[in-house]
Length: 135
Image (cartoon, rainbow, N blue to C red):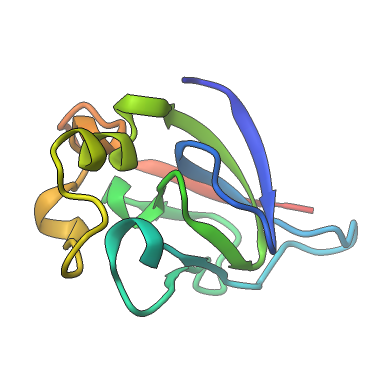
């Protein structure tokens, strides 16, 4: 944990991580493109998760689960820099496998089951995270 990784369209997410920056290859402006992440293989959720800057170069996010990405998911659109929070058996996927809940028979609700808790790499405490963009 603690490694910083760059993910882009088509990449499989190698570990549970938290989005730090939405990245853009264009050196002249910040990314205004949403990050779309397919987590169906892990959580069973039908729709891709969207992480957006909301048109603001620096947005304070107060709920860490809004920025959480899970090992086994896939980046569908956009680019990001993320901080690894859990790997292997400590990841959400590893926990689900160990508990016999994988593959999910119905969608797992992130907000109620895994919001900023240990399985998502959190401490159980919600703290403000400053989200920026990278040119």
